[in-house]
Image (cartoon, rainbow, N blue to C red):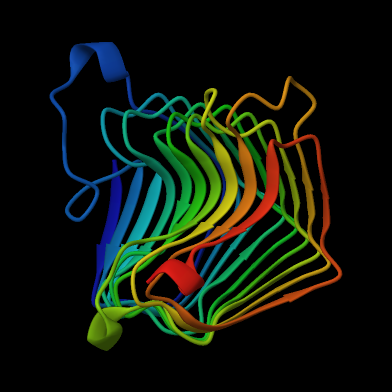
Length: 242
């Protein structure tokens, strides 16, 4: 609906963008969205309502120094916020993502980013998903509730392409997934990740749910002072079985 390519020094604010999802074909978030940017830098997106799109809400690809702040992205077929394709130094702050496929999706090669003080509710898959060469990011003070599968997901990547050297701290993760849901799931050959002082809680019955799961091929995963309650297993560390 609003697109920009090869632009710099732009502010987008105080807009409401309605995607009219029911009347439009599905468009991949790598190429479209309520807001879609490609090869841009120094862009600020503030106080935007992006809603009801048959694709992603706000997506930026190969864009550096993008600030997304105080936005509400909701009821999309795709992703709420989509920093992608080598974007550097993104700041995603004080936003709301509701009833999307994934709340915040770190795509490929997203580095030195910050996601803080966001509220993510009722997504169908993961509250926050981070994976392919997404390194050196900080994820802190986010509130994630009622995710369809996982609160925070480190995707299943090889050692060469893993989400290494990321830090998750002071997040609140509640009510994640079905009977076998997971609060934080660290998969693949992920290395050098710190999970510190997160509150991971399950207010429903424990069933087969896990607070934090550490995959068998991960390395150097540090857990520090996390508060975990209500799960069948607080921490499942599979590294001894790998």
